Length: 246
Image (cartoon, rainbow, N blue to C red; front, side, top):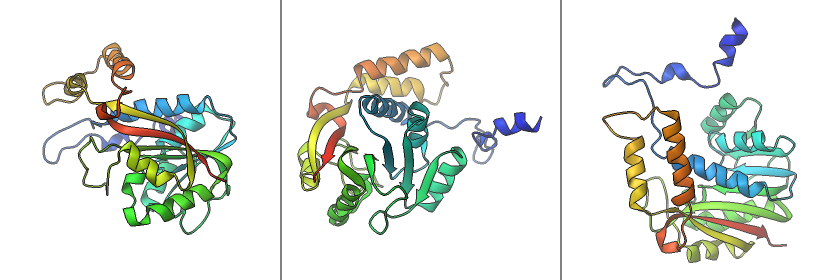
């Protein structure tokens, strides 16, 4: 019986229901469809790469590390973050994950150098005046001819309170060019009124959409029609694949 109970503790479900400031029995991540589609996008990209080790820089609660581990169980996959609270949460949510609390500007991770580094929605949190030092530190933990995957919010998207800046393709490449050769640029998260309609379906004060097939249909439609943008002017985020300069 204890083993059955332990299996249920993969998520802190007792913290979901609330009674203060009104009753609620669910949490709703309004950015969830964007986030999970990005994870799938990254995993599909990684499937085409030849690598042994990978590090997620600024891993936060460790979800991306977990998904990479699940998809590629024979790879060395680690996550780092300078937030001790984030790392503790990552370890709690994914006990088999390798997570470390450190500042890459001051120390190197355990593995030393990695074939691929992920910098997913992190660079916008770095002070502009510290950006060059930070990117040099990122470069130094990537192996010779290793790869960097980076995503950032585009200037088309209003600046968020927790971000120092958003980027155009030009401004992002300007930051990267000293340390990396650019291999691929993809604008994504398309600006489209259809996405607003999807957001209303998934998040509104009147009903919760719980029909599994309906939600899956919406998600597949979003990935097929609204995730990638043909033009930079239509995007809200940018993906860049780059290679470390020797």
